[in-house]
Amino acid sequence: MLHLQIKNIIKRTGLTLTKSRKKVLNIFLNSEKPLSLKQLRLLVSDMDRVTLFRILSFFEDNKIIHTIRLDKGQDLFALCVEECEKEQHQHNHIHFQCQNCEDVSCLPIKDFPVLSAPNYVINNLSINAVGICKNCY
Image (tube, rainbow, N blue to C red):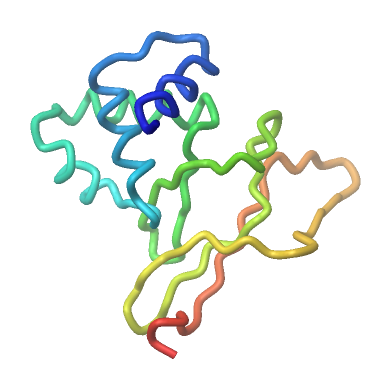
């Protein structure tokens, strides 16, 4: 089942399924949380850094993953869900970071805000929230 899911995601992009892309995508599909670059590098220990960066860039360009930029400058990577607006690569969720355990989660919210500003085009809206998660509460 997972192999078919990986194949379909890559097929949607129109490019070939390589061993390296399959490995990285498998990691994202098996992860319930966004991953840091450090975590990804540990999980793909036999892959060189340049290949990993290219795959992450390819995945983001093709709307397979999205980057979460935290307030302290750290970037995390998360798999896009089916509801991701493919045209603009927008997600109807917030990124929640626990102050206690520092865990980061993508939390869907009802009535995600839509912003418009005269003479501006907003391509992406990212909302980060900080508080106490359900496990630490």
